[in-house]
Image (cartoon, rainbow, N blue to C red; front, side, top):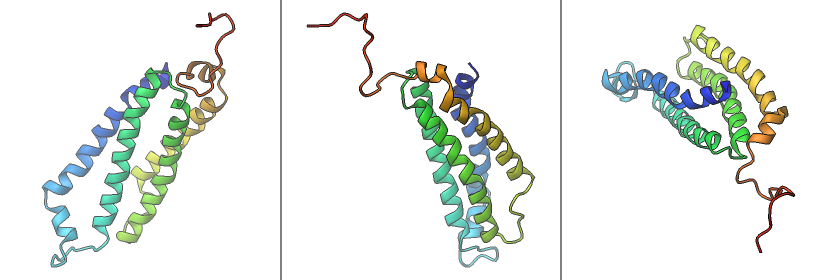
Length: 159
């Protein structure tokens, strides 16, 4: 039940965080100021960093939407993608923080927000990744579209 709630609200939660984070950058002149070579605040790597963040987060939104489909269809790939999304986040958060310090050297690598986000992802991953790997309920539930799925012995043969 908890997994289902988290999966169902995942794409909405991501969009609710990402849109207010990135939209103002393009509306308030920040993008132009940091990516225009003639600007006093020009940073040659900011455009690449932001484009990479937006691309990764867009992939995560798409993966989260697909994850909702896999969950409700009880598809056998659900646990694998669920684990993959957690693993990708656990790699991306510190990698992005490190790259941000290369683009903006005065920024700390792990500010309070980054530390909190990484800690939450780490704790959630420590709980839910093992659950997906060892749970009998997960193995019994997510079986649809499984290649070479065993037909129960009490099923009638068509023939």
